Length: 453
Image 1: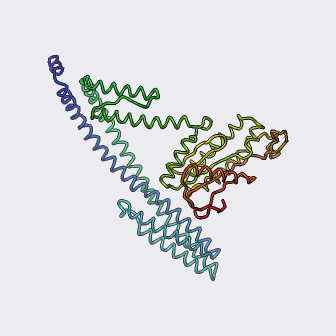
Image 2: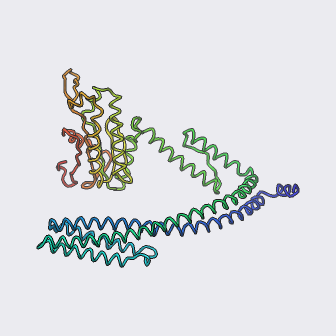
Image 3: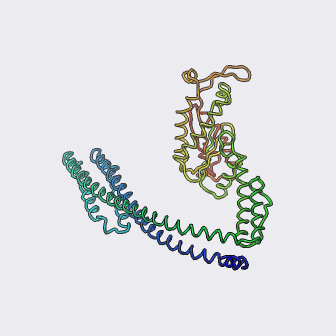
């Protein structure tokens, strides 16, 4: 044994690496074969769950929802004799057919009673159509058709529930199989991995000093980055994985430097990105001609509130406003929405033009409901607070409201972030002329510079 170890020590680096990786590779291959076999079984089971069981249950829920909607529109059409309700009923009827087509596209469609569903739904639709016609002459006859249709509806729903229940049971059985396969794979892979760990230690021991210099360079790079120095990092000249890793460090340093700049730019109160980040987002969207809605939020009568209650409570209002905007954007916003804090009580949202109306309304509704709590009871009861101007004149400041200026590129081309800021400032001044919380949207077009907001 001792002689064998001595022979291994005398081997060249290449041979040591070859011997170590060869044995390690064989074991890894065994682990991989077993793992891939287990994964293939799991993949087949997961495919059945994700491409059949779950879609089948989801489509079933949609079909039930569709049937209930059809019943609602049909009932209204019969009572009101409304062509609009009839049109909505027929639209839902088309949606039902599309859902049936989705059922047919699922794996193993022969096990799904599609023909029975289609036949029942055609009878269901026919009965309501007869009810529509009968409602023009006889309410009682129309009611009879409606009752028959509801019976068909109940049969449809029961059939759908039966299909969904079968899919649910299949999912449960598949989950049990996944658990069994996973447990078996865990223990066997764990045992083989333990052996692989021992071989890995052996391979590690034969790493020689020709790798130490690149590793040292990477270590220095790590230290430079950790201490906030992102320029002129040590580089590894080799073209192997360590060289690639060194290049990755360089790229990471560039991104970390940019992130640090954005962090330093963040508002200390709300922790939202500041002016630099806002400008970068605007420039990017304008350069890409992406749909853009720039929303500038401003608190009306905020100065009077600050003078009356102090900056600490004023900061609480700003923070609460920022949280309201963030909460609404999480609920109604979308991917790519950006919230920034210019400073003071000016907060910015950059979103898609299709969402700004919903977001602005929700923010205003929430703000108007919550702002009252920041006033003392006596001021809240009066509906205003009293303050003094610099000249000593006593004035009244109403309860704060929220003014929102919205600038979009829906009807005009926006050239620069400076232009967007100027338009937003103009619209903000216009919004603050209203006594209640409101939002105003710049409606001017490129071909009508004299247009109104």
